[in-house]
Every structure is written in structure tokens, then in C-alpha cells.
Length: 120
Image 1 (tube, rainbow, N blue to C red):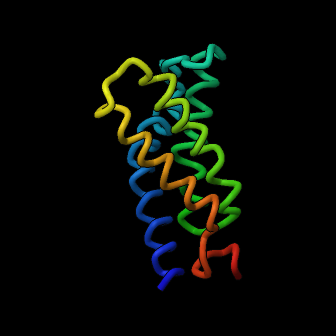
Image 2 (cartoon, rainbow, N blue to C red):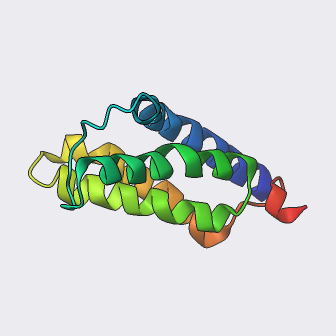
């Protein structure tokens, strides 16, 4: 049952993350680089990094390919969201970022389970 639980955690969390990443991905491919710059590296690089963390890596996590590595950009993105982008916001605003951070940290620590490409 542990592996089934990890599959559900991996897939459902990543699908939920994709709902945040898809609009950013569509913005990126439309060459609309208007985006926040929380790290001071520029709007376009910030958007690109957010797309990697919220769209590309969750796809890898869903299929279980290089899962532990794929969680790292997503975790970093959620750290930036929680502690920089929403630093002055009330907890209720930060809560989603914390939940995603917790979920993807658990996936990093325990791995993808046997229902993944990593285990094939």
C-alpha cells in the first residue's frame, strides 16, 4: 500500500502544481515575459525558472522519471513563493506554498515508489 500511496501523492500533487504552472508556461511560449522578479534576476529568467519548477518538473514527477531530482526545483520555487513573494502576506495566502513545499519534500525524502519509471 505504501507504493500506491506514493503514486497518489506524486501524481495528485503534481497535477495540482500543473494548474499553477500551465498559465506561466503559456505566457512563456507566447513571449509575454511580464512577471515578478523576486530574486532580482529579471522578469524573463524568473518566469523561466517558475515554469521549470511548476510545469516541467511536475511532469517528470508524475511519470516518476528522475523524481528526486525533479522535486528540487519545485521545492525551491515553493520556498521563494512562501518566504519571498508572499513574505508579508498573511498565513492563509502562504499556506498553499507551504503545503506544496511539504508534499514535494516528502517525495524527495522517500522517493517515487515502485510505480514509477525510476523503479523500472
